[in-house]
Every structure is written in structure tokens, then in C-alpha cells.
Image (tube, rainbow, N blue to C red; front, side, top):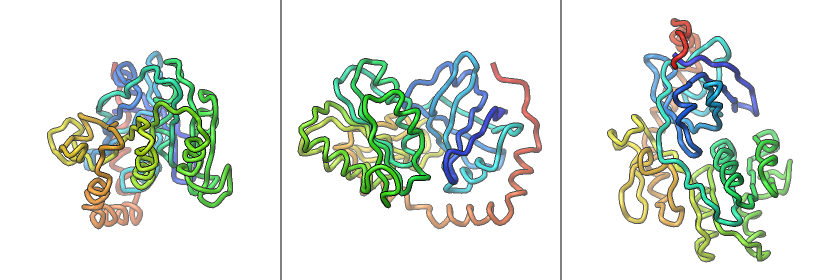
Length: 292
């Protein structure tokens, strides 16, 4: 069992959890993820590690309640525990001194981008962060990203905060304004990442995206996370999750991610209709002694 130490609501349906997982906390690197299981009948859900404290033995996960597992997880708090936290998984971000970097976080993608942005800053890069969301209340981690960025820009679809428009509008202004950009990391919804890739392609700016395809085991065995990159089949869990944005087939990725939409929606309806049944499974076992 992996006890939940703290939980905090960052925005509607978005919560930050601090979870005791000492071995993961000691080994994790920016860009890696874990696969969690809420209870013994639960699905395996991949979540990026948004931070870690190796001395305290705690990792941070930021969860947006979209499907059954994430909605259920967001009903939990201190005193509850996750049954499984497997990881760290995936290849860490490539951290080195590029020069001037732009880190783009769309929605909850900011949580995935933050640890890599922090590591890039510590490596000596000049970091410009762009946060995007549909509306002001969905902008997250602005304070945290602002503290490690040389410059931070915010954009909302409805103009309720920052500039009105998309993250690509802010990025286009930087590029067309002649700003030097050596590296871009973009994380968020598939259409956003695809749009960033198309914007930077003619300028030949190195652009990396973090993908979140359908995933089951996280070790390359199930093949569920297949993605086409540079005309080759790759596995998001072991070859990624970060890939060259200019080589990703975003159309195929979006199509695969829709494969089980009906089943996902049916599972979500069931848990929302009777959340107590799943919560009882979670709370059947009290957190065991800490895993060392």
C-alpha cells in the first residue's frame, strides 16, 4: 500500500497528491512516470511524476479527473492509500544545456512539464514557460513554474487570464519576434502538441513532446502504447514518453486513443453512479507499514 500523505485541489477536477513511495522517490528522474492501481479491481493508470522528495520518501502526482480511475482517485485523501505504485517507468527527459528553451504546458500538461523545466533551468538554460488553459481557473502551477522560469507567459481560450488565445499564438510571437529558441518541450492535449510541431517545423527548432497513449503494463509487453514515430512503430512506455515532435504521427495517435472511448465512458458512468462501491474496495485495507 502507498499512503496518501496530502491532497490539495489545484483547480476544478485537478488535485495534487503527495504519496509515500520511497523507492520511486529515490530513483525517479524528470520525465518519468508511474503506473498506479487504486484497488485490486482497478485498472492500471499511468501518471507522470510531478515531483519527488527522496529524503522524505514522497512523490507528487497531479491528477485530472477525466476517466473512472482519475475521478475515483480524486475522491481520496489523507488516510487513504493506493494499492500499487509501479515505477519509475519510461526514459527520463534529456537534460543538457541547449541555450534558450521554451517549455509549454497545456492544461494539466503543466504538471508533466514542470520537473523537466526545473531540471533544464538547473542545467544552465534560459527558460521561457508558456501556460495554456481553457479558462483562468484551470491555469495550474503558475507560481511553481514562474519561480524557475526567466519569463512566463499565460494564455487562456476565453481571455479570462493572460492573453486571449492559444499557446501557439504566444509561441508564434516569440518566433516571429526574432527570439532565439534552441529547444522546445510541449506537453498537453494531442491537438495542441500537433499544432506546436507544425509551427516549429519550418523553423527547424528542436521540439519534443511527451505522449500519453493507451497503456496497460508500462514495460513494453502489452503493446497497447504503440505510436508511430518517424515511420517506425515505437512503444510510448519504454521508448518514450518523450519523442521528436516532428516525427510523431499525431493523427494515428489520436485515432488509437479513441479506440475504447465507449468502454471508458461506460466505466465512468458506473463509478459516478455508485462511487461508494469502489471507495469501499479502496478502504478495505488500511495502509500497511511503509515500503523502504
